[in-house]
Image 1 (cartoon, rainbow, N blue to C red):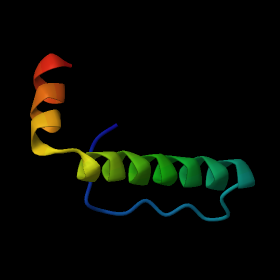
Image 2 (spheres, rainbow, N blue to C red; image 1 turned 30 degrees about the vertical axis):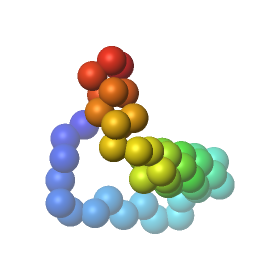
Image 3 (cartoon, rainbow, N blue to C red; image 1 turned 90 degrees about the vertical axis):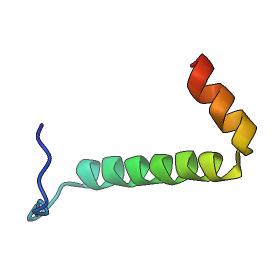
Length: 50
């Protein structure tokens, strides 16, 4: 898949697709929250040792 600045518009998405997108958004937000809550030294250690 390639990156594009143009948004993808899906007409009449299925329920399954909507649920999947919702799960992806929730996961992304939870990962961002984890990163925000990390201390700077934890972040640098995790990056180096991962």
